[in-house]
Length: 142
Image (tube, rainbow, N blue to C red; front, side, top):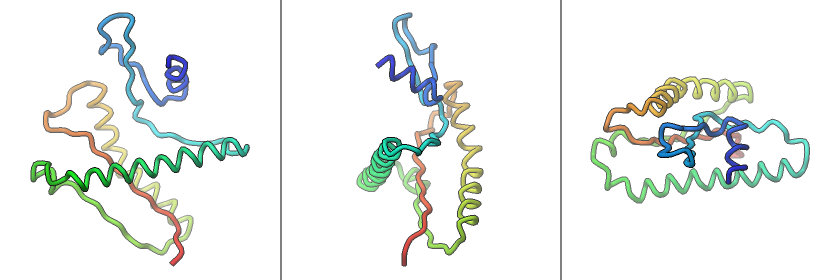
């Protein structure tokens, strides 16, 4: 476990949270609130690992959505009304699709920074909840 935690920290996926430890034997970590970029797909093994990881990532996203759909009526009404989903069909070039991705990420960046500051300071308004955002954009045959 320690080896894997060190590897995750080495790649900026997690960070230490020493203020949560009760004594010197405990080590608490949290997500580093970053993203994951895959840069080396030169070997068949690397491509297989990325394909397996991506497949599971997509399954996890849709399981979260399915769980939300099953339980959303148990949320307070204001949270039900604030939640949303959407889909669009667009006709774009690959460059326009890349531009759309940049714009969506730019829209989310201030919210990511707000979340990061709240997590780091442990000072969030009492009515905050973890929010899951997922979107995909890809070419599709008609």
